Length: 300
Image (cartoon, rainbow, N blue to C red; front, side, top):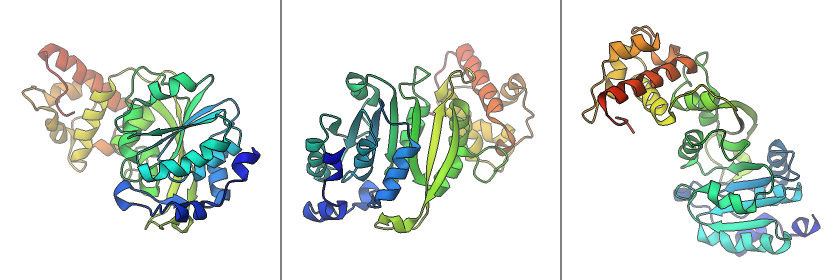
């Protein structure tokens, strides 16, 4: 992939295009070629795979994916300043790079990827800190399932990564994000990236997380599962008989005691004690309640 390898150093590109990282966009640029190559390899094997990358910035990870043999990279970047730098990579990528100027939060990425994907599609990204969690939740709640991607390789702040992979055994980190990720994927932290690797250096360590979609997760409605987990962990120190009262909103009556009984969960348990399977049972019980009441999801 000599064309990509012959590109000028990223620091020079950033200086030439005056790409000072913007805090408002959650930008922290990664210049270390060894690290970008390590992240790309973690998303592999790359050959024959189409990658969607969110927030490529000046294109460090983009270069690594292309150099590693990715069939195609679709780079979605909201910062117009970075488009010219990405276009330079595109010019030497032999038709394997598509640059999309737009906001990943408002674009249907599955439709963007579909015309270009002849094989598996994966998402690999050093996610902007300010939208990383919201993007992950949107992918975990997406329909239909199995989803349009076969793997997520994502970088988060370490504290967020720990929440993604948490189970009731890690009560301090276990919450709605862990419930959603555990429900539909097998998630694990692959490795850490020190703050000193970034420009500017954030105040926290980052971690690369792998999420592999489960082919047949326990059946339930994703938005309702999210609602139940949000309510339960919204008052995580309280018993479920109290915290789940938050579900009764927007004119939607919910008998919390009946809901818990239907799900087979003791009313005196706290959210941090309930496994993913228990939250799925609660979501299914809430769906039954809503169908009986003719109501809509109350918390979303």
